[in-house]
Image 1 (spheres, rainbow, N blue to C red):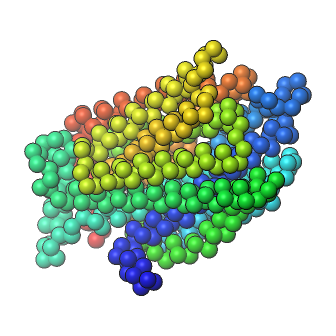
Image 2 (cartoon, rainbow, N blue to C red):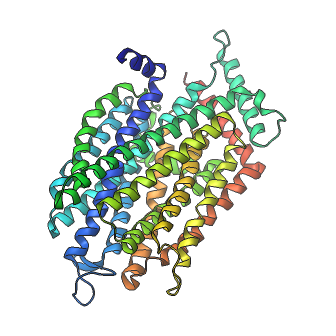
Image 3 (spheres, rainbow, N blue to C red):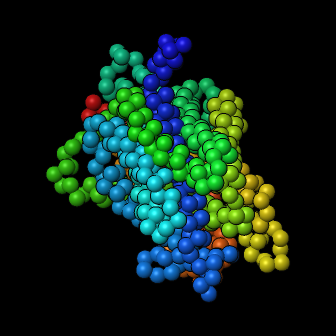
Length: 514
């Protein structure tokens, strides 16, 4: 049995290590975010008061930064702080990490840090202001590490997609090999523009896209499975243990999986592939590297529009998810068991939707990836429209009933299951060799640099009105923009020509260093 597992692992060590790495991260990623936020809301309602100094009922004011703030407003500020600090750290990572030869060491160290911040959580279960503040601080650190890891792990997708392409015959000269690569790039653009009648005859472009989707989707499923496992254990413990022990089962499992993540990081390190380093001549002018990604992006029109549309989508979805999660707690007031079941339902929806998308797109794709991206962007519009209906006080609908939150969770995760892997593959096609972290780091930097704005804007509004549905109106407006941008990028020939131009440039530049 052991031999067969080892043989299966060695069939594609890079892919299997990548999936295991995301599974390992999925343990603290899901359970930390779920139960630290839950604990903050529980403790906040117990130590806080309403505006008249009475116990919290519909809203709650808690100490935050030397003043009294609405609890939900404080959580919005925490998210903004995580984005701000995450963006600052990601700028440095995206600027310099591509120069490092052993990037897997950096990934492993961050995974260890991810586990380390989960370890003290169980000992912060007290209903006290000090425990409340400590959990808030840990949550910000958790957010920063999450954003950096999301950039670093994505570097393996373009690296492995290039490796999945058929290698040219060994007897060809370097010039002939370069010309063959450029020819295949021209064919890829023709496929994107529907200029080939039968694109199934062209194997190479389809092969690397399929491998990229396989890697991206299965990696996401790995994270989801880790989250489901963690939540199942919490549900079992919450029903087995009694009293306070059952209510804090989520914090206990968070601590346990913190240790598991630290130990498992060794296996992740041993199997992750080696990604080539960038030429180091620019290290002498170190400060220029901070601006290199932004300078390059202005010249790559196709990449710019793709990145902008996805960044706007991601930023708005973060805000949308935060609002709906707080609405769920406010409207339903769940205990630990129900909160765990709701969180697990989201992971189950991700697993089902991702698996269905994988099977459909790998075995019998109905249309191009570019169309999938537009569809994914359009699906999420249902959620803010639905929530805005609840603005009317005399309407008993619009995220006011329990079943509504489960349906919106399905729609929310269906959209993400399509958009996230599709973007990674389309973006990976445009990433030059040796600059993987630079470009995926740039996506994180742009997201962190802009996402905090919505939280800072909505937090005072929430603090003044105690009405969580107002931010949904802004979310709806912003979510229309990615659809428009992606339709333009996919239909205007200017962007197809720009894609071919820069891919040819990157092939020639890469071959010059071989």
